[in-house]
Amino acid sequence: MKLATAYNAQTGLSNFFEDSFNATDCNNKTIQKDEFLKNLLEYRKEDPHYPVNIIVAAQVMKDDFWTITYIIKSKETSAETEFVLNTHDFKLITAKSLNC
Image 1 (tube, rainbow, N blue to C red):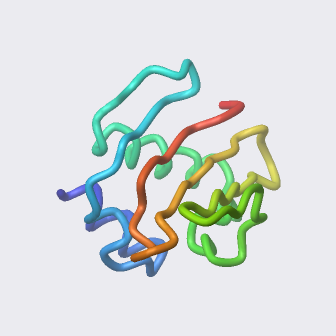
Image 2: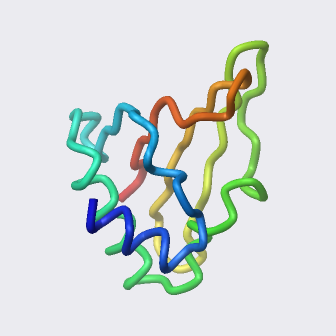
């Protein structure tokens, strides 16, 4: 969980990635949570303004009874990340890297 701690320190999203969630990379391949977090930290190195710390201000792509889907986009690269949260407890269900 060192990567989660590093991510939380950079973004101020304490405990956001403590949830158990499914993660996929740009090739739609299932990856481990630590690998997903490592990729997000790499995007942040490439684009310090990559808005990983403003999930709640991200663009809402879909909102239904069970889930809310957010997307965050890099200002400098084509990187995008999609997050799906459960509307009942707002825990992270899936996280997907897009357009890497």
